[in-house]
Length: 358
Image (cartoon, rainbow, N blue to C red; front, side, top):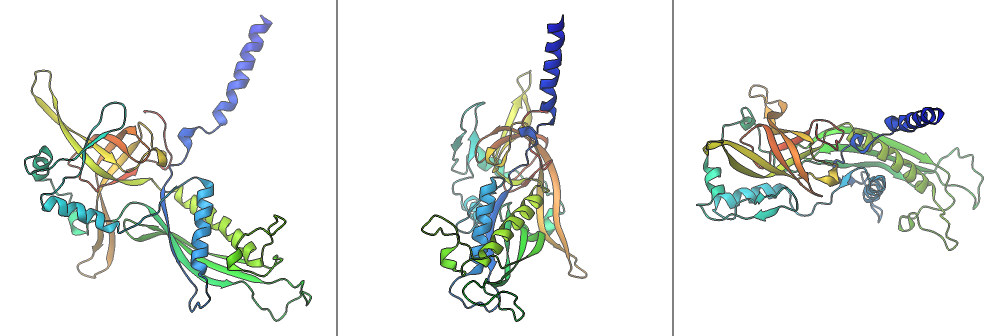
């Protein structure tokens, strides 16, 4: 009898901590991030670029934290959608459609010719998602660009009232000021911004941009005052970026659409079901069962009377649920809505990821 009581107590005590341990389902989605350009201080004429130094340090910090999906974009992403539209207009290769089984990697099938099923589907007129047409068609990818400007970069700041003793032991004063912006790449609008400042006189060697964080012959780091300021600012900026990214929803695009007709029990054609491919996957923390809202967008609606920018237009067109998630993309089904188009925005219903069906 005592053994049974103790076993029940042990099980109770053992399982209690499990409720307080955060599970993978509570992890934040990994947002797509691109570290863009940081401008040098006005009138900068030295042989190195402080903007490049700041951009590299931010990249290192975000990579170290492993909480974002880091991107490096080559070429003109804005032209990607234009090229796809040109292919459609010129009767070229259609956007790839997919034929996915329940398991395994989807086979990509390119459809050519005006008599293809995809061509016929594209010729079907779609209801306009009013008032999206009043704005510009978005052509850029959904990601957060981190950019900014180095306002001040002074590795050897001379002060008149320095209390430091003269001679070789005198420490340098370094001052650093950086303005950081988190920009929604798709719209070009600034989501968050902040200016950071740092000052240090803790260095034990002169600043050298050629020897940033380099070890000496004894394997020890001898940092300049500017190195200390950079290290402090790197942590502060990294914390700011992650706090802001964790507060926003994960966004991506529909990159391919497959329409299929279901058969009724009487053997007649039923409703048309839509399955889509989206450019978000397990790399971003997407899992089976996750829900995303689908939006048509129009950018930069202007007041016809004043000319003022009224903002961007978001029209909700449906909800999709993830069926399979691969590393860089996922397949989803439409739970509500229809007539999706490639390039439509998808946005997670929460900033947190999920790991099971509702």
